[in-house]
Length: 190
Ligand code: ADP
Image (spheres, protein in one colour):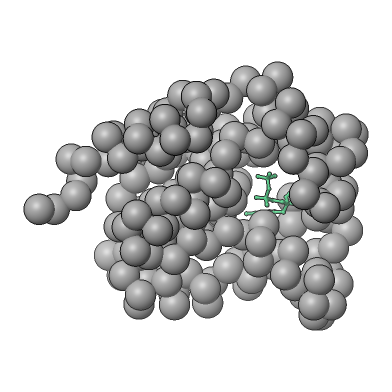
């Protein structure tokens, strides 16, 4: 199974990503986790991306592709992927699709976890989890703004590809997972 998760910060991509990866037995690939790992390890790449992540700005596409590329290739060899946080811009989606389509490894479904900004704000405020970008209201607003400006256009991209699924992600996370699995059932081969 090859899935892409889309949604505002706080929409539950991480929670559903882990659960879906476990369900389908494929790796959960989170661009945010990978970026934060580079920052924590103080790698050369980590030093380059730290300021973007802490301010809630998007990391430039070339850097993100460098961070995520090898992990996605390894995941495909493992049988598929649940992509969480990538792609986040139309350019990332188009570049990723070009790379994957020739190899027959493009996503089979894009799941949009739909929540209002109100719900997203409430959840981010409640989680923090040691992530400084979840604790600062200015950074949260910037991430929401970038979601609407840069990531929302991806919904049209996936609609055109005929693989968009929209899920009401304001429900409790168990119910969200059930809704996703029901929506994906037609894709599963017996
Ligand atoms: P959330 O969805 O809650 O904002 P993520 O962990 O997906 O959390 O992302 C955290 C930060 O990492 C983003 O605010 C951004 O700075 C950076 N980031 C993650 N994925 C990407 C991406 N695909 N392109 C650009 N920046 C990214």
